[in-house]
Length: 250
Image (tube, rainbow, N blue to C red; front, side, top):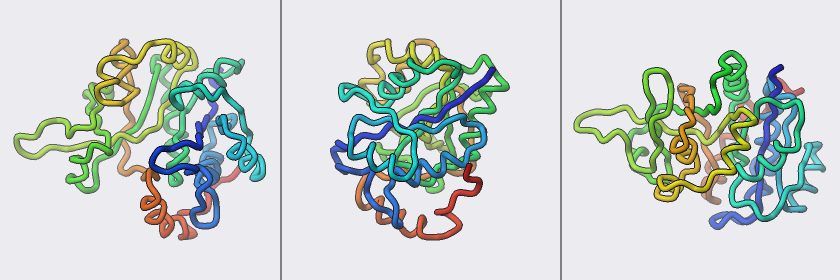
């Protein structure tokens, strides 16, 4: 039995943007936009917000979200969702969904879950898409992915990869992960790895421990909100009825 849940880790203390989950964009908190779009996915048995902050929890309760309070000691969102997954019974797969991507595509969530359903050998899955503007690949804030002909990740980097002697296709990694539950619980027991520490990219820990990460390639991705300037830029997109309303609410 394949049962997948979507978990959205959310914390208050962002260095560049404190209180980001509850920042109002187009009339709603950022986190609510994410939650509503996740609720449109057809393959998720539940969508749960994971937080250690009562301000976030109380706000999420007010718009009807299921919330799980977690330890304040976690170093990452992955550790936070693993605390919840560890207590769940009857759940086979977990999606770790970024709480700062208000335009996350519900059909992508379904695609990731169905890939895991149809291919039980997949331990971990994520997504990438071509850069719309190749110049953006030069930014260390945009993570690049390279993968083999079978869709298995070879490496992720903040540097532009591959190195291009001529023209090259760069793929932006979208920060969403699907795990087999037991893989997630193994992952958080491993110590941060050398490449992970060098790049500050947690997914490299999985590669360094021999986990194959399957990469689903999409035509485009959803932008994240890292700064107040990003929030202002997305305000215009989210204010559009075609972008702000979920398509298939449950």
